[in-house]
Length: 161
Picture 1 (cartoon, rainbow, N blue to C red):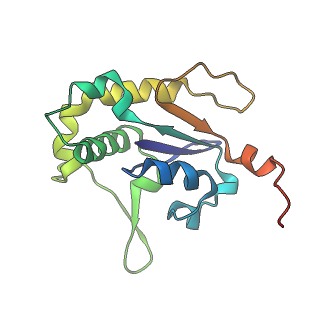
Picture 2 (picture 1 turned 120 degrees about the vertical axis):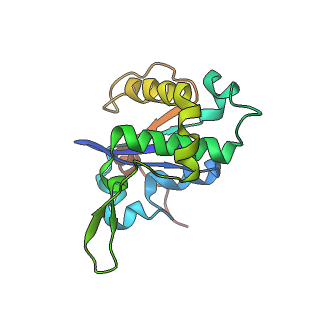
C-alpha cells in the first residue's frame, strides 16, 4: 500500500509498505513511525492509505514487476511529482539538511517508475478525491481510506480496568 500524511497546509510525507495491516493500525497514532518523531500525529490533518493492488491499473503489472518493486516505483514517482516536505530533504551527519535529488537516480523505484505511470495517475485521482475535512461526505473510494487523526483523539476512550 501507499500512504500520504497531510498537515493543514499540504502534503507532508509519502511512504509505502508491504505491512498494510500494521501500518493501518499504527500510522494514524504515530506508533513506530519515524515521521512522528518530528511531526507528532496530533498535528497531522489527514492520512490517506491506498491499497494499490486493488486498483484495475495494477492488474496490468502482474507478471511484469513484483509487488515490492511496484510499491517502490509508485512511492518514487509520487514523491518526485508532489515533493512532500519530509521526503524532499535528508539530514546530514553534521545535523544540517541536504536536498534529495531524484533526477538520475538508479534506485529500484526510480528505474521501475516509468512502468507504473497509469497506476500513479490512478492514485493521484483518488488522493485528489479524498475529503479535506472530516465533515465532508466522501464518495466511496476504491481501495482508499482517509483518517483524520484529530477525530481519533476526540473519541472517548474506554476506562482502563
